[in-house]
Image 1 (cartoon, helix red, strand yellow):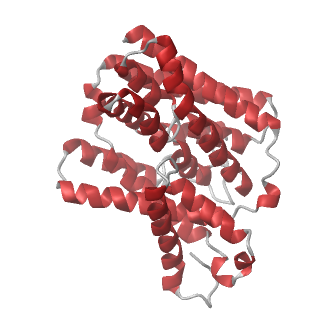
Image 2: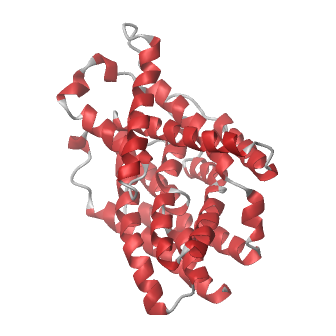
Image 3: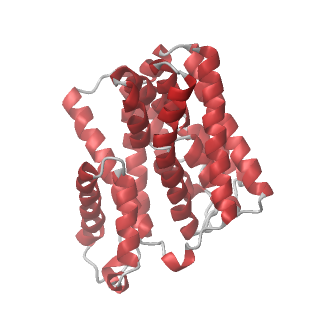
Amino acid sequence: MFQNPSSPVMVRWLLPATAGIAAWMLGQWIPLASPLLIGLVLGVIVVNSPAGRLRIFAGHQTVTKTLLRLGVVLLGLRLSLGDIMALGPRVLVIIAVAVAVTFIATSLIGDRLGLDRGLVTMIAVGFSICGAAAIAAVEGGIKRKNEDVAVAIAMVTLFGTAMIVLLPLASGMLGLSSTQLGVWAGASIHEVAQVVAAATTAGAAAVAIAMTVKLGRVSLLAVAYVAARRRHGGQPVDGARPPVIPWFVVGFMVSAAVATLRILPEPVVHVADFATTILLASAMFGLGLGMHLRSLFPVPFRVLGLSAASTGIAASVSLILAMTLF
């Protein structure tokens, strides 16, 4: 994790791994906050404290990227394309339309507002696909400011948390069935933990539907990465031109295929799921080490406006489709 030659190689990996495990443990006590968010917050706290000046917290970029990419590869094991296809063509239409409309509309609005293109792209990907994990997956392939990564994740957290409360209330007012609420939550809410929290109010069946729909959105991560790169014209990042489809996105798709074939024993799947969380939380800690609060706040009203608009688009499009098709 650290390029400082005086730092032992093992420390470069043990430090973020320890932070990732700590984030996971804290996540057991704070169920509505994902370990990814907690990992990011831990990194931000460290780098903005006196401890942030210590050598061991410097030069973290290389290991952070490696941890992130390995986590994205294993993330594919959570997907079973067979389960997603089993929901039928109506749900597939909802997923595709909701993701496409949210990504495109958010990008257009953000550009019209004059916001930094990298920030707009990360908000568009995070709000349309899977929150912090999607933002972390694409940020290395586009030109963006370090502080904008934290801003995008903060917006995902803020507005996704609001939807935990608003969607069940709106569902009751509209008289939606548990199936409709499950589809709506899975197709519109940003983070997996937020989807579960919102759908729980309608029972276990709604949670199962919501999770499957949400994973359907996650399955489009590779498409979102390509779209993000095209939005930036495939320009070099940090002096290098990333491949059209990088190895970790290919690995993600291979893992999804393995999950679909169900060839791994269940205990292995559980271990991989845990490893995915630890790897991504560890990577988010590394990203947090690059975020200095003085460059983050105050959050511009245009960013809040874009995030509110993106949330409203995702929610309204998926609601209309859920009510029309179910």
